[in-house]
Length: 250
Length: 267
Image 1 (tube, each protein chain N blue to C red):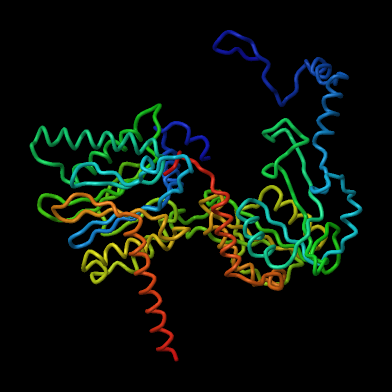
Image 2 (tube, rainbow over the protein chains, first blue to last red; image 1 turned 180 degrees about the horizontal axis):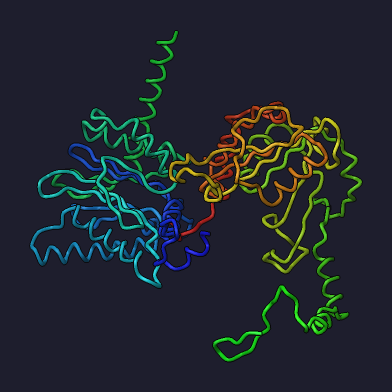
């Protein structure tokens, strides 16, 4: 039944599915994992870095991109689609700033991206964008925001979320471990993001990329050394927790 | 007969039969050329057994000489990676022979030099216990089949987003008495291709056999999918064959990095 209703994007199936949109969501699962966490004074984006070919310039393979000084996003899915969406969003951010003399709010730019994606689910001859995005930033009021969009053009605000391969496993980890204590300070929020990624990243800390935005500060990308430090700290804490547990049982 | 938009007249198939049946009969008769093409295709499609190291052909009777108590077959790259790292890594396995075949769906026209990625099957037996292999059905033989399938093929009334992939499902023959290590595959899901053929063969010949099917959303080589097969390590067939699980996990990780395909389409 699916094959008769999945060729043209504008056709609903008898039970109300838009198969092309659902297939686009499958394309998102082929991208590596990205996780976003909204702390009290910080927003964190962590991604699983894809291994780069020997002759490839690592700088050109980026999953975390700045849309403006105070907003950045991570995506999962088709690289080329992401590039198009990011370019349009960046232009919109500057156009908004020039027209209204105010930087965009995180919600505004998320809505723009989501509307763009939705248009492609309702035109004939076009396919939906095969990406989901996590958009983070601070508004002028100083409140941290995290939004997630998907190929259907829906967007929602989240406290913490994951997209891409094994997103479900990471989301379950976050549901168990996202507590007020866990995001009480910046370093705890960063550790939570790394711990969530370590659940699914295949080769540990060297395949993780992290970016943070603090209130009134620009985007900061963590270097490989800084991430390694964090991973080592997390492993120490894990060992100590296990030692305590084994002491308690004996 | 029917007329198309472009003004051509085409012959349409008709179940009722037509008066032109005789004409159709003539058309259906094979010319010697057709027969020759068919004969050459049949020769290309023959299954060949040979030894990879010496490239000499293997007689089927030679394989049948090896008695067998456990036959384990892994189909697909994740199942093969699981077997290579967890089972074949413990103990010395000797390659006995391999089978290759070609058909019209293969992407290459070269039937002589098929790569292991295309229609290849390698047979190994455990040096220390040669009864763990064989092709001839035998009493007390137990067959284990491991394979993967994409989760979108799994039919269920639940929403697919609520499924916890990867997950294992089992299907067994009537003679298989051991309880499987996961729930049985529910209707209307079916098994396809080679695993289905092996399981049907075992059911017909009353050989105890179990198929473990892993539904995953990552069909290429993936650590989490391969690790989903771990419960199978406690089965009677595999328990005695697996020695060092942490070492096997390390070998699996190396296999992953060695086989990583560089693709820039998805990030």
